Length: 81
Ligand SMILES: [Ca+2]
Ligand SMILES: [Ca+2]
Image (tube, rainbow, N blue to C red; front, side, top):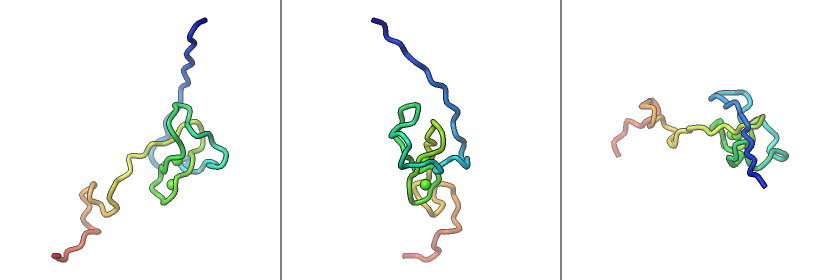
């Protein structure tokens, strides 16, 4: 007996791809072709959906929605607590 390893090449989705979160979550597999769990919320909307294709985009989404991580202070309050 011999261990056979199959390598599946995938093309990564780029940030902003129209394929992100546009797949059919009801019928997509629980993992993408690399073995990563899916669905992942890749577009920052409130819900996670599968991406179209074999690759699930793993977004580096911000934790804060007020621009803290991007140094965008426009949404910050100027009031002193
Ligand atoms: Ca997704
Ligand atoms: Ca989403």
